[in-house]
Image (cartoon, rainbow, N blue to C red; front, side, top):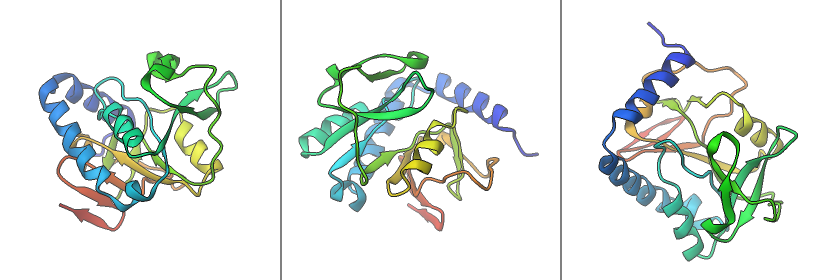
Length: 191
């Protein structure tokens, strides 16, 4: 029996809550190691990164690595018009609590205007075809519709993978999904 998006979100929330924090930290480190070995990361001069929350794959160490590697880093903020924008941040001190309790760039950070870059695409769950169940706001799909030239890769724990997740034909799929065990593309799994 197929699960609905609501059921999948509840299941992943439960899996995150039950996961050992040390195991999540170690899995995050393996995911970031795989991600930073990708040509897409090495060639990017700009990383558009979400700030991890609620036991997601840890992105803050990745932001630090990107700065060390000489890359610019931008993070998203949903502004008053309900639209998500990215703002350039130079350190984690440029973040403050924002929408949904998630850390986001402070108001004084410059707007990130770019035509090229590497975007981290968050998600609740994914399947082997790179279909994605998001958090339900549609912010990332709408952003990618406005910026189709961005490379977009998802980071996920293995427990976020399902054999199949519901999807719509208009959904924008991650070009890759990097987990602690494998890298998935719409064309296959690489372990």
